[in-house]
Amino acid sequence: MAAAFLAAHGINLDEEMSKIQFARNGEKPEAYLGQSTLSKISGVRLPHKQSNTLWDISISQGCISAIDPHAASHASTSQSPGVLDATARLLASSLCHAHIHLDKCFLLQDPKYGDLQIREGSFEEAMSLTSTAKGRFTEEDLLRRGRQLIEESIAFGVTHMRAFAEIDEVVECACLDASLQLKDEFAGRCDIQVCAFAQLALFSEGCETNHSLMERASTMASVDVLGSTPYVESDPDKMKKNIETVTRLALRYKKHLDFHLDYSLDREKEPMVWHVLNCLKETQWRKNAEGRRVTLGHCTRLSLFTPEEWRKLKREIGDLPVSFVGLPTSDLFMMRTETRARGTLRVPELIKDYGIRAAVGVNNVGNCFTPQGSCDPLSVASLGIAVYQDGTQEGADLLYECVSSRAKDAVGFESTTLDLNIGEPADFVIFGREQVEWRTRRSVTEIVYDAGHSKRQTIKRGVLVS
Ligand SMILES: [Zn+2]
Image (cartoon, rainbow, N blue to C red; front, side, top):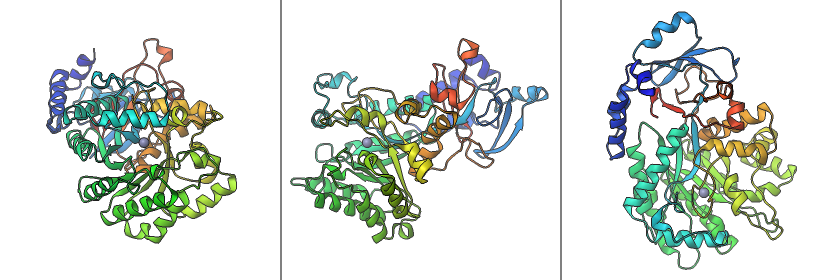
């Protein structure tokens, strides 16, 4: 049915699929992209517009050039090559992983790591099992698992992602090299920022190699982001040194900066976010970083902040390009306390009450840090309805933005908003029809409540990529 539908619009599905397969084998998919370029998507439902009205989106040079009411007289143009008839399905801005670990995905499913299953579920066990797994990583399985994650993500509507690739004395640059290869392989279908990431300490005893690997990764032109995990250092002084060193490297080599920060629910622990901000001011980040962004992930300790502390944080951030990424699926599983309290950054509150830039992300897929869940960013938005306890239409729309436009903004990609303004990138996801017609989602709110089971179509810069 899909083949016949696409054939009617000048697209040969078999030919296109063979080209996608080609791309999986390592070739860039330009040929595929060239023939799937759309000039118009006709008959779509749009967010923030009446659900019983259909619209036509015109695309020029990969951007939205016009949005007009869909009229019956337009039916003839929907038969033209380059025109996709959306058959009254809902279209919205595409999705983005603001924070995802590409190298350690699917470890719990992959037979190669079948003996490394969770027995306790503690952070220490996750670190230990993942460290054992990392000792077995090869280029073949890094590419195979990473490629699977990216393909599944694109099918869910993801066109952009920030992918974390670990560097340490066990894997050295193997994860980074594989991630950079995948970034190149998927160019055109998904924009991938690669973050050279130190999950292990840089300054605690025996960590000299990790530090020198980070310095080496900084000089690599295709690395977009430098990231580290200050909280794994053995004391606060070393945590601060970690923050200072990685900030200076990012500034020197013009990279985005991304810290896994303040990952605790312990009031006695000094939040490191203040030191990050001091560091950014001392190094005159805004003036010297040429538009690079700073992104802070987890930050569960900040969920204990008082309103006055949040207001102070907003003042201290000032005009610095700082964003927060909440990772609720991981936090709720991994954040253990003696009283069994759970905590995650209250992302909608940051945005609405304090005007702080924030998004939510998937973080890990199928490993000991987060065994549950898929790589669909909408599953995290959906979880957010309960976690942040806001089931209103406005609340659901905000959560959609948190895995779409706000996620892209948090990591420095150009965004397409839910308003779909003229001139914005034609980066879209079209949601499918359900078998029972009245169950077909007609609004973003319905999608966030439950995205449904139907297949989505993904459009990147006006090109049908899935
Ligand atoms: Zn992470």
